[in-house]
Image (cartoon, rainbow, N blue to C red; front, side, top):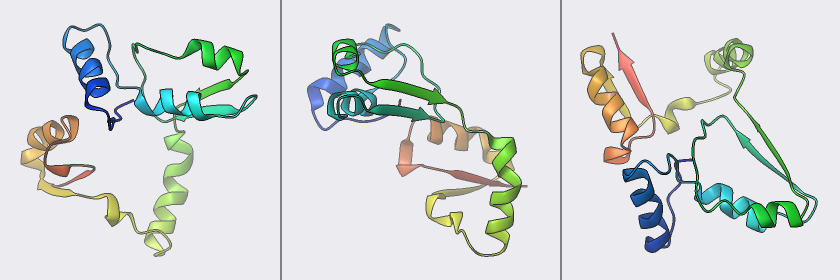
Length: 127
């Protein structure tokens, strides 16, 4: 729901709708998934918060008999097994960490993450 789009006019359209609070998300990836899914297929949206979107391809969704499935990640269920795998060296999460900041800079870290500034993907705060 925070996707960017290769076509500047489509991206600008969504950003303007957000600026006047007529839209809260940039659903480029969702639109593309609906328009490119096979008839009778399933489009899944997992782990993101969705809000108001414009230009939702409801006709393609219905006429192609697509199933739309959504849901939040079950963090409490997966946290311990994932941490165990990280500790055993089976998973290396460092590839998504783009910023390491002291705890005192948490507001700045949140700001750059929220605004996708400085190539920010994931901030690790150190106490």
